[in-house]
Length: 299
Image (tube, rainbow, N blue to C red; front, side):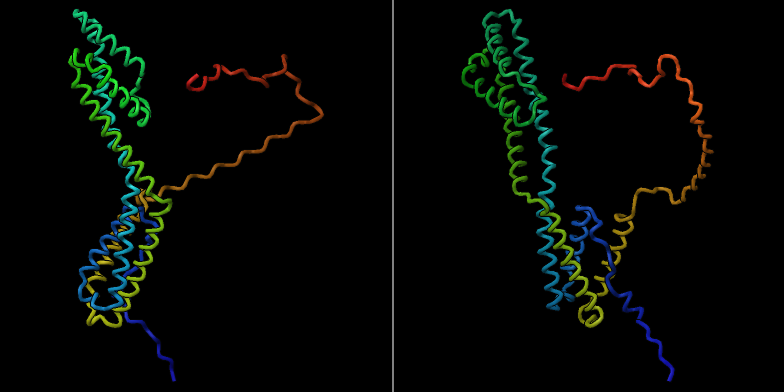
């Protein structure tokens, strides 16, 4: 009896979620992919009437919540941009205050000139630089402001520069708050937390794909998986083409291979019995540098 060739239904192969290498996605793309999948999945009410599918969807949603939390923490370094912006505003107020005090040093009013001299000496004592590290500058300005509001309050009022002091205080407090927030966020961040969260999301995603593909074969009449599978394959295709495609080559035309270099002909060996005569002065074995070496920065 002749053997009957067994074939697999092409409709079954087509009606399943394809594969995608999630490990190659960067953190942002990975989170967005999972978010898109989760949002579409939660809308599939007919499919989620199946208890196994519902359990897989719930686990994916829970894993995504943890990935979201870790991803947000990993992005907290963006606070640095806000700190830089607030620091710039603070520097403007500080330099404005210095300039105002300096201008009064030449005041024809002796009382105002004397007040300016005391405030200028106060500024000189602190020697604050706007190029200092954030924490150092913040602490120094806070102490300077405390002096201005107490010991030098009369001189500040005499020159009418209290507006600078008030604005500088507000700007300094903003920087201080942002620095504290950044420190707190870094304290909460555990090394590898986002990486672990991604692995958990991947495991939940793979489980969900297996469940949906099985439902499409066994219970598609009630689970109604077709629309979700179609969405998933379109999403996977998009990520493969737009995100995972290498961007190194922008021209599809392959480059022409370079001509191999011709090997050089070996030179005739010198006769050891007839060594070359040494040049007068011993040759140029030792070369003095044309310029003296540069000193390291800071010396």
